Length: 80
Image (cartoon, rainbow, N blue to C red):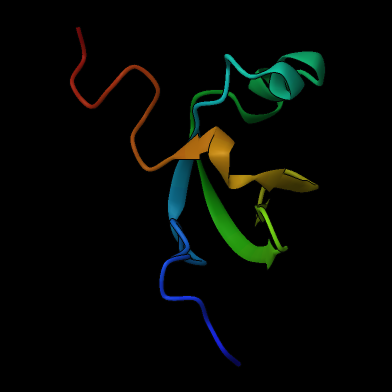
């Protein structure tokens, strides 16, 4: 399978990520903040399309765009 070297996935299966997409339209509309909360979520698989990477998690049903997630917790690494 040919892979584009400029398109490197941000996450790997098995990694823990946080939901950080509170400011986007669709997460607001579909209440993603309530679904995900502030805890970590483990990526079980990924679906790569032509223009997006969708993530599947072990604890939340569905596929979600990777843009809404980060390895860093919301609000930064250091507590205020």
